[in-house]
Length: 173
Image (cartoon, rainbow, N blue to C red):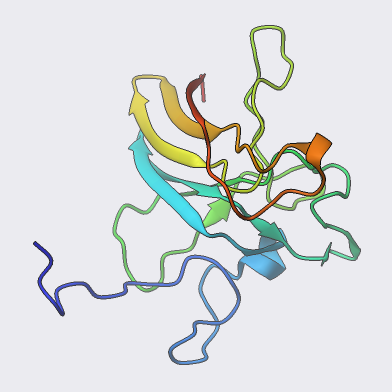
């Protein structure tokens, strides 16, 4: 049962400015990583690091003077998620989120590969991380995919619809 008033915001993880007090965020994700915002996320710990799996991540139009839109290289239009991390395990107002980056230094869109090294699933609109867990040297992540309204053959990705399949991925990171 939820008790009104029992939940308090600790910090804002993404964006440049905290909404309540109009102050800069500690993470400064637009300036540092070209990440405007995300709409979903799940976190888990692995080997002393807290990972944040973000779904439906929105890049800034440019990053470090170069194009950074979802369709700009090295981004893959079919994948719009992000992976952030912190090694500080104490959640507080100064939590500084870092991101796994691509060759430009902008946040990286993860790609789930099959056994041949080819993309196995898409991570378009409403195809997002569901959960993650660390187990020894490996990380496992669950993703929802196959949004029936986000098929590229049908036109641009739709913000509607939902994932119709769940998959588990493993990483040796």
